[in-house]
Image (cartoon, rainbow, N blue to C red; front, top):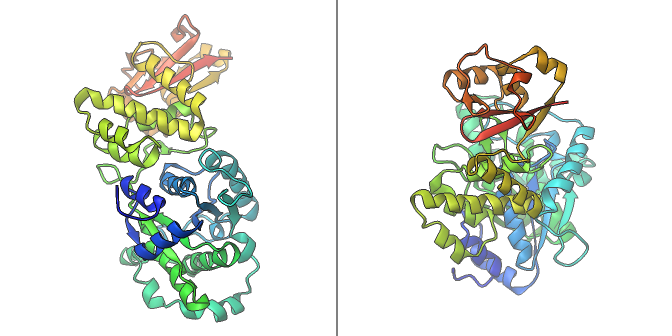
Length: 418
């Protein structure tokens, strides 16, 4: 256990959430003295958040569990711009209707499992920065706040430097994102008394902009707190796979697939992920992360169950757990495997396996399907597919009325007739 006065900073320290803070001692005192408000901003660029957003969500979860008020700030305004990320391309611009639809989906599917919303002192609050950004008058905003931002400093931030070093275009639209995010912090402090913004370590520069703006404009002390970014052993960002993002919305990614994502993480990451993405007691996590060899699989099953329970609910987690056990340990097929329905006449006529691998989402393209088959990783009813011309028909239906299609040993889907 660390030596902070506040429960929140102690929890975050022992669970590996702390990377950098603008002023540990003063923030610690404030969190220990009274109920405070903190926020994290989330993009509204899709109808779901993904695993990459889980670190922020869990920080807000523990903030609320420690007796404080979390705010989920939806970037309805800033999503119209796009942040200067480490990617080379500018973000696709979205219209107001699409952004609002995305916010509605995120609110109902990604936050309410983790946070308790309401009107109480420590109840979570969801706000949209479009409420204040959309009405700003450009000249007045530049006059009142633009003078507090120096281009010299903005050019020093890693996200900007990376783009410039690659000689990738960085539009004025994106450059303004940093100013908008800083203003968000100031506005939340004025409206709700918010003193803390949290985020990933790659957001440090943007968050510090808000801290500095609060000091220069309103003579108020604000705080920045960031968590280390999680990467896989090969250096990739957590939450990205060959088949796409690991969505939190189970309408976009099934509970079984979500469970399997956590079940198949690298052995060396199990302890870190248990600390960060489950609510298991630290002493239990300490026991699990010492397991070696085949025993580490038991820890991974617990990780998969606990993360799925938090995000999708206990019933979905148990169903996914049962399906995984049937599929991998008992040699049968679980009811929760992803499935598609194929017209009976179409199946009778025969369908190339490459098309079905794509339709079942076991691969993301026909090229990937061809490589899978050529590498010996494609199977039908557990029998390896030998040729790219393989045709699947009603002759492949099992006695139970389905066809099991597999990509490697860990990804499966069922084909049924309608």
